[in-house]
Structures are given as C-alpha cells and as structure tokens.
Image 1 (cartoon, helix red, strand yellow):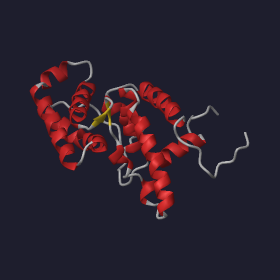
Image 2: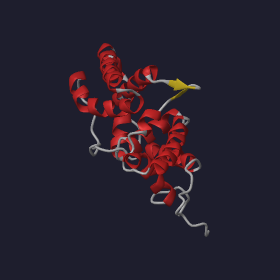
Image 3: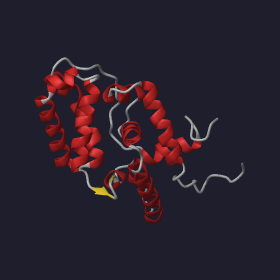
Length: 201
C-alpha cells in the first residue's frame, strides 16, 4: 500500500485529528435552474465551509454577501462553464476577504478547537500536547494550494463525500481525488507519529 494512501495509518491518523462533530452526511446535487433554488440547495454547505474560517456572525454575513453578489451576476453565472464553480469562486473570495490571515495564509486555529479528539481529552497534559500538534496540522493545511485546501476542508473538516465535494465545487471527481491525494501526502509529513506506534519497519 502506498504511504498516505486510502486506509493507511497516516490517513487514519489524519482523519482522527481533523474530525469535527455533528456534521450531517453530504450528498451530491445538481445545478439549480434559478438563484433562489440554487441558494436553497447549497446555502447550508456554504455555511459549513465558511464556519471553518469565520465566527458565527461573520459566517452568516459572508454567506449572505455571496448570494447577494450572485444575484447581481446570476446571468453571468448561468453563462459560465459551470454555475457551481462560478458560485464557489464567489463564496471563496468572500470568505477569504473576511478571514484572518497570517503571512498571506488563512488562519484555521479556531477550527482546531472543534475537533472531536480534543473535545474528548480530559487529561490536561494530553490535551496540551494534542492541541500543539493539532494547531501545527491546521497551520500546515493553511499552506496548501487553494484547490487542495478547499478539498481538505470539505472532505476532512465538513464530512463531504468525494461525490458531494465534486458537485459543490463544480470539479471532476478525478480532480477532487487527485487534490486530496497530494494534500494528504503533504499533511502526512507534518503529522507526528503516535507514541503508541512501533518503530519496526
């Protein structure tokens, strides 16, 4: 099995570190014929993405602004190569304009505190150690190229399937899987090995 591939110890550890609670299953969807129907279809998914970078009030404002901008350019969106991709680019630009940045990269530190693994730790020393490693991982995620960052956020933090991420982004399934594979390889390199893992090759 290729290092960092599906089902590998590295990927399982990545999933455990990034898993966040209470996110419903995602299902693929098709482009909507009009602005109102499209908003109803994707608004909740857009909010989940925005929540990773923004607090609740900023999240709601960013999503509202996104659909207001889309309303003004809906004919252009419909005439674009893919309405979903056009809309996603508007959402992404709106969220990133509001998100705090460090060294030109969006900060995801707040999202790190919402991971299941941290919420379930009760020992202060274990919590402090895991928090440090989790913050390092989220910092590494922020350094990913834009497409890889979005795929990791949707897949690992928001719980989307490959198919649902593909539908939401207006990107091919092959591209989603490729972006995730490259991102996972990079993130594997910054996940410290578990203290319980053996050292035998």
